[in-house]
Image: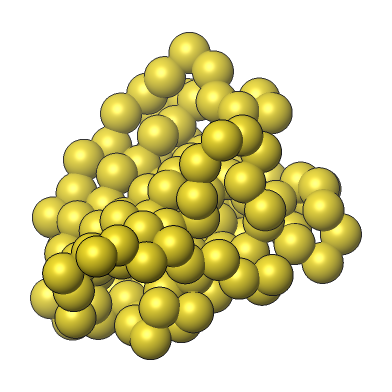
Length: 125
């Protein structure tokens, strides 16, 4: 049985998908972009500020599913520019102090709303 996870504390989906789906104790979180749910748009700032917003969005979805970053086993990071990797990694690392999850980071030619970073994750209870 799958459960759709949805919280107003993260951006509403911009297409036909759910924020996350929980099935058999595994949570699949859709890619989050740096939309601030309180204003409904991407706030001004650099890639570090945008990464922080993405991580806050992921955190809100994890919390809505009764989890936190300690439950995350895999992340995927999509960057518009791989030169931003060190800046993104600095912010990202602050959310995974111990036992960081498996991960890949790839550069893509474009992301939704032409943002500079998107991150998805898989978490397990």
